Length: 427
Length: 159
Image 1: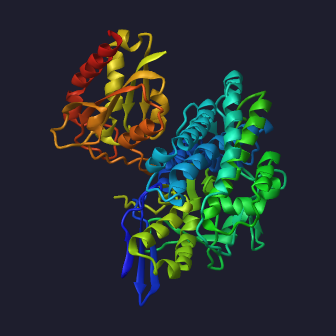
Image 2: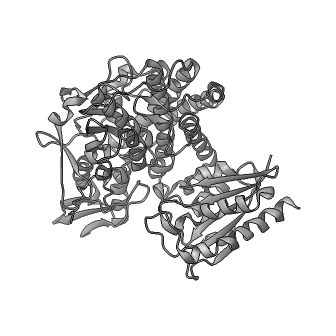
Image 3: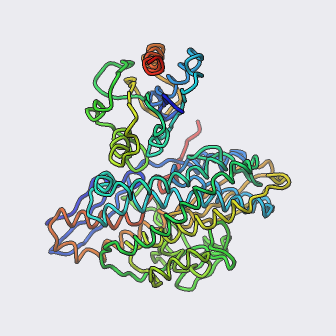
């Protein structure tokens, strides 16, 4: 076998390829070629009024638009020095539950499970296990229904704004979701029981796990940036610890710690760092399934997603039951010049935003660091770890094994390629 | 109960890809009596994906209206059955590669759309580049696409 070349990766979001160059039976070069065209979002945002930002950044991703909205509204609120009401904060967490539900259900069942079960696609899985796929689609749909109820539509919801929401969702419509959410909680608990029975390839890696941490809740929208290596930074200091580099073969930047090391963001990092903050049923589901932490096997991020699916359903039920909107849905904003940062936990991992605005609320500069850009160097490093094993395999099997590892990360290449600088010469 | 759901599919920011959305919009304005009939439901999807199945599962029939790229001249109106879909190599351009054909296949496999009769009205696209305007050749054929939708809806509701 000379090399492994996958020109276009299937079942990932966006367009990328994989190349593993071999020499004398050793992997000498591994590249995730990210050729998805750059999308220039940070350029689009310049001179836009701050209230346009959440709806523009939501367009970066069809799977995790809420993450982009939430990181941007918090960063801009920090720039203005304002804090939203507890009711708004609760509704934001609920909206994020909807996104975790639809994104995790999609990845667990449609994108990764076929690999673990030796099926070429979710269609093949549906042919042999239609009930599993049917329940997966229902799990996902409930997440989309929740997003639609809060944000007006199930993809690219539009209700979130700097300061809160444009309007409170209808209480009766919200409560009507409860029977489905209860069903979903049961199905998510089944998902954890099923997830631990799947055959995972052996691979343990000593990652530097990085995630938001909040002392009182499973961190999703606010907290400090913690690492399993002991770094603790406020989100305002995130760039003191983490930076991005341009790499020739990738239209997405690559994230490293300031010491030049790789790190891992996403469900494994969150669960390993924040399991003590899980809600009771999510925690119990881990105990019953005998899940021991830390999980260091990248393929087992599916198990972490399954536990987070329980967490999201459990939290959604609590928040829907408590939903009782009072007062204005959006606080009044007084414009002033400033700079603000924020990080929230997108389903795929930490999503950092920084904005500088002028006294009229117009964006002067924007920086967006998506989770997949932070994980790309780590995926390449994992493939190096995997290389000694896969080069002994027949080519088709080796290719599939490498592809599976990439898919286990649930990379969102479209999210990761939005930021190359666009230089416009004005004449 | 929904007898027929009319589904416009396409991305409004990708030129002629929006032909399906636009055709359904124009049909609704041109034939309001049919569009507002009891049992007729209208949906639009920027990204088809798996939620297409949810949109049609309670209907007797689904009429999907979408832009198509084959070798026909731009603006050609195709009227297809579900089985004809597989003859088109659908370049999904959507999240995780879920195109219309794969989605319907999934729906059949898990028994979610067993009772739904599916018809597709395809509008041959000229350009699917970023942008919000339809090409003239597609624009000129939208009235024909509206008539096709009307015929398909009446064929079901007048049964």
